[in-house]
Length: 356
Image 1 (tube, rainbow, N blue to C red):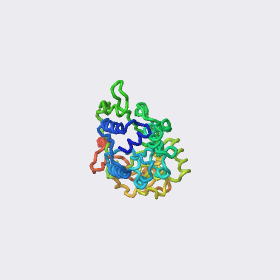
Image 2: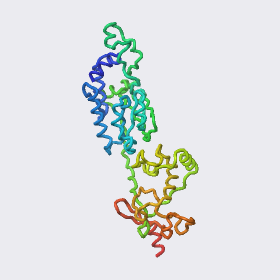
Image 3: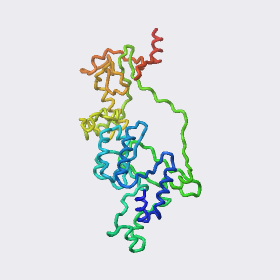
């Protein structure tokens, strides 16, 4: 912090290094989980702490998303390399660009974004015309000529309400950044002012939310797996899907329908940008034409393969992968949950009583 404070003073961005100390303290007070951390002198101290924080939080199931700003330093490339192959982790990681990302970061394929009114796009100058800022001011006794070339932080430019956030790559998480809490009327609306006054505004929704439905599979009275019918696919989605097949070849079922593929970059099928929901429905219909190896005993609610012929005894195909299931009872009777518990369908019980 001391080194950065001195540098900002030399560039006439702040008048005194103590202003940075006051800002850091106010930033930490603005929200309980905000931290402005002084790691001491030396770049490697910051690198070590940042790497450990990343290693701690990325595998943490309670951590929903990590925004990380390493794009100015190629030294972080080896740290990020393992995550590009892990689709589940990559979806929870967004890189923040200050200066434009180097080719190494671009090749990682991770999501990127810019915050041009929060972070500078260029480094602070080390020297001007071969003279360091401190030497120039000491020898000439005048304000350095580059003072006006650097955007000085003002109350307006430090206000998070006016900051812009620009995604560089498609970002799956579309939640908007929360605006900065406002200080009392008449006070400057900056994080420093908020930290001094302690004024914050946050709305928390405490309404009761409906619990998500438990995943289950359907079975008939003989405990044979049945496939829930799929809705008809849209003709436009089918056309878009066909165009992607022509351009890239066959799509990877695992990646596009479940979001992950264990083969990663060694997969024989196309990954790329995930299909839209309409295109995924087209792929689900196609995947149903492939027979699941577990057949009638499959209890995986996420299995997208077929478990019987959808036409049953009325199948008109000369050759059918599911010919052995043509005589199967296709009337759903029970739900089977992941924990092994079962629940009879009320519709089936009603029809059963009617037959009796």
